[in-house]
Length: 111
Image 1 (spheres, helix red, strand yellow):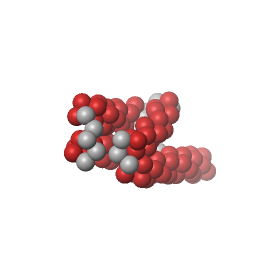
Image 2 (cartoon, helix red, strand yellow; image 1 turned 180 degrees about the vertical axis):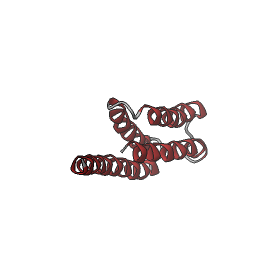
Image 3 (cartoon, one colour; image 1 turned 90 degrees about the horizontal axis):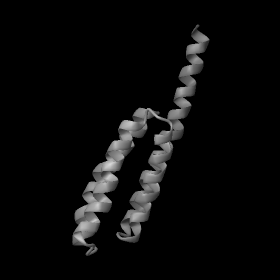
Image 4 (cartoon, one colour; image 1 turned 180 degrees about the horizontal axis):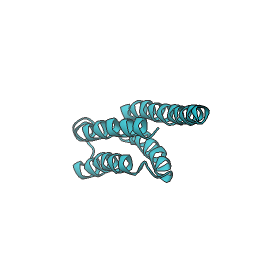
């Protein structure tokens, strides 16, 4: 589960970094605000990736998804991109939990 969620957060960090020039050039968002929001969320994604060994970090990942969707208030296409990454995050989260449960079951059956 951790590896799949980490991959989603890493890809999301790249997209959030790329959203900064879009916010500035297309939507006329103040460069400082765009850098703080896009860059801050991108850095938070990467930091959270490293913290995924702790159970509470997944809640932080859920909050990042909500914040990415909320960027749609500044850049409307971010509603779609945020929902897309939220779906990928939830898919990685729930599929990863299922895979870990199956591995534990197989390991217990093999002993």
